[in-house]
Length: 177
Image (cartoon, rainbow, N blue to C red; front, side):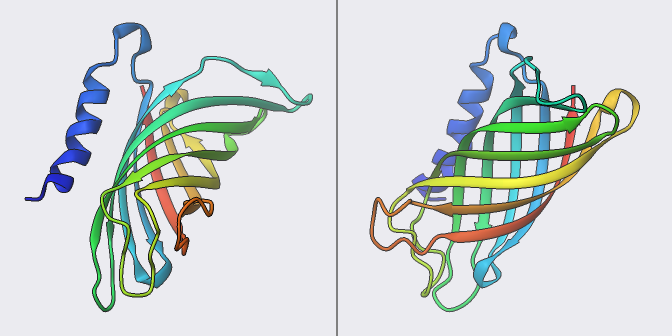
């Protein structure tokens, strides 16, 4: 196994286990997605709620959380690569006070183990920005479960050349502790 393949899961594991009890993980999730050039995505994440809520209107409340993630991209096509993705993202969520439906948006930092997914998509650098918009529903007693959709764009924001970027559509299942 290569050093890069070992680095990603080891770094995430160290980060998650270094968390103190005062900053306990408040949820976890798994995502499956499909991206440009038939790139497949599998991602796991841990989240830490900010425990703050802001009234946006009479019916909408804003909140947020930190999300640390570990993803694996499986490339398709000529000279395809598989790569690891470590991300850290502040996620803002908007929820109606009268339903379990939510909207969310985020922009965060990602580190990739490789900079090319295949012969036509090069990302230019290991450092990338990842932004997403999504929606979903809380399900179950005390809203323990989440089922959602995310559209994510990952690119280096023209900080390196080339900057082909990549888009993903993913389904997310979450559990709130």
